[in-house]
Image (tube, rainbow, N blue to C red):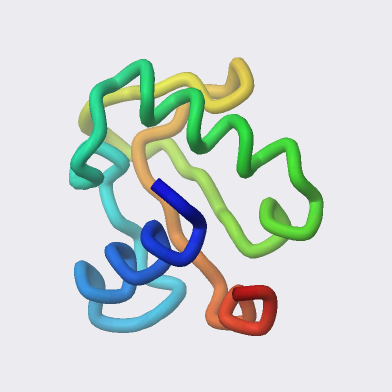
Length: 80
């Protein structure tokens, strides 16, 4: 999944940018999801717009940090 595909999926799944979405909502297998988001998390130009939280639900390891949800800042559109 490319960054633009991920952002489109996120935007179609939430009411507004900044709203959290369960990571389990993304159509990816656990290992693929963890690898994809860990890669984006390592890129400063992308990660500054991603906010991972842990608030119940399926827990994933994003660069070794547990997370269940993601919210994305609207400014990410500037780098797409």
